[in-house]
Length: 199
Image (cartoon, rainbow, N blue to C red):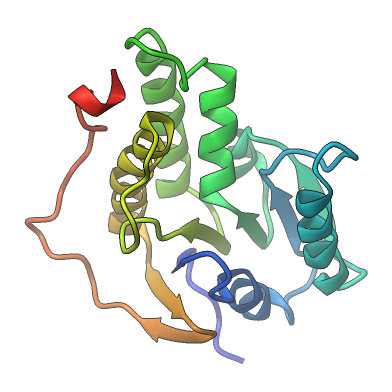
C-alpha cells in the first residue's frame, strides 16, 4: 500500500462521492480519527440526520470520532491519521458562531482569525490528514446573499489549503481525478471584500 502524504485534499460537489473516496484513502490505516465538523443531528432536520447516519454506517468500527469545529486545534495536537469531513460544514459552523450570516462586516475579523488558524495548522500538520472540501463554484450562482457569502468565502479558503496540500483529488460522479500542483499565479490569501449583493 502506498503511504499517504501528510496533507491530502479531496474536493467534490454534493453527492459526488468525495467522502467515500476520502474514507477509502485511510481505510487500511490503523487508529484513524474521523473529525466530523457538521452540526449534531436532531429531530428538527430528519434529512440531515439521515445523511449523518449514512456517513456513520460507512465508517469502520475501529475508527475514533471527534465532533468539533476546532479543526485547527485538532490538527495541532493530534498524532495519527485524520479524516476531516468537511470544510463546508466547518465554514458554516464558524459563520454561525461569529454571526456571519448577518448584514454588515462585524463578523469578518473573527472569520479571518479562524480561517488563518486553520490554514496555519494545516500547513504544519504531522499527518497523514485527509480533508474533504465542497466544490461550490461550478454550479448555479446562489440566489441569496448568505449563499453567495458562503460560496465566496469557501472558494478562496479552499485555494489556500490546496496550495499547501501534498496531493489533491477532484471527485466527479464517483471518479477521482488527480489534480496537478497549483499554478504559481493562483494566490488569494484573503477572503474577498463584501459586494453589493451581500448588503
